[in-house]
Image (cartoon, rainbow, N blue to C red; front, side):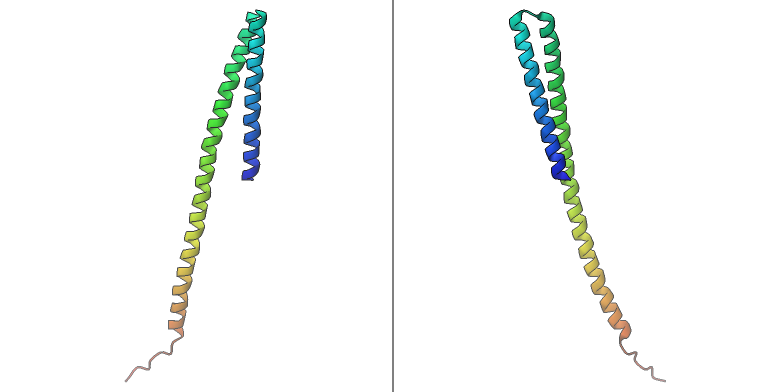
Length: 108
C-alpha cells in the first residue's frame, strides 16, 4: 500500500515536471514568434503548473513524514502491548500458583 502510494506520487511529480517543461517550451516558442498573447497564456500555465507541482511536493512530503510517524507509533504501540501482556501473564501465573498452594490449617 505504501509502495503503491509512493509510486503514484512519483508519477504525479514527474507529470508535473513534464507539464512545466511543456509550458516553458510553449512560452519560448510564442516569444520567438512574437505571439504575445500566446506567450502570456503559456506564462500563466507555467506559473499555475509550477504552483501545482510545488503544492503536491509539499503535501506529499508532509504526508510521507506523517506516514512514517504513524508507522513508528504503531511499532511502539505493538511493543508496549506485547511487553504489557508478558508482564500481566507473568504476574497472573504467580497469582494462580499462590491460589493453588495448600492452605495452612488454623490452630484451634
